Length: 102
Image (tube, rainbow, N blue to C red):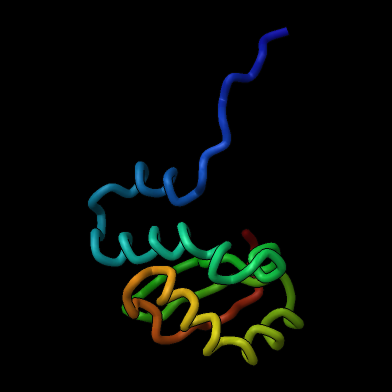
């Protein structure tokens, strides 16, 4: 039997290689968000919510259920602050939550 030699890679690193220079400023922001998401959001939120798109300073986050949308609406200001702190600059001014797959 052949042994699988592939190693797991962080999604941010994969995306960096795939999108290159398509929309550098927007893509760079999204890559940064992917790289810091788990730390900024925390384990429980990261299991139930994932960044999906970034336009201007608005981040769209897909969540697993309407209950998570409700929960995250209350902690949105803190999440925005933690993201911007992790990113080292104020890239995110608003987060919109939507039930979606990830």
